[in-house]
Image (tube, rainbow, N blue to C red; front, side, top):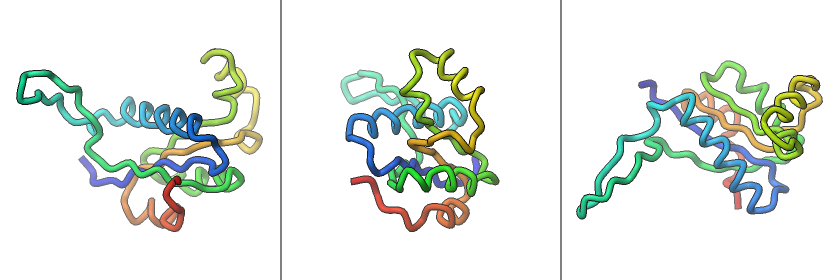
Length: 134
């Protein structure tokens, strides 16, 4: 497995509940596309099996909403980049979401969060100056 750095960058205006939800959605996408980043199941001392969690840190950063599309474009060469678009919470279901995404150019989309993963230096060049979400 390649040594990677992963980060989630969320729009800094989001209320706490939406920020938590968007980070969870992006984390699920990471787990689906990179199952090797999820550790094995582990049993507690009393035999209760706990499902595996991420094996890499996943800091949550923040940026102005207007910067997110540019960060997404800057990450084009990274092995993994995901975007959570405003259409996701405007849509009534996944079919509606895909219709909204398909009918609008990327330039017209409004990202609310992105997940980037790749070599540490490359990820740091793109978002190393961004603050942690507070």
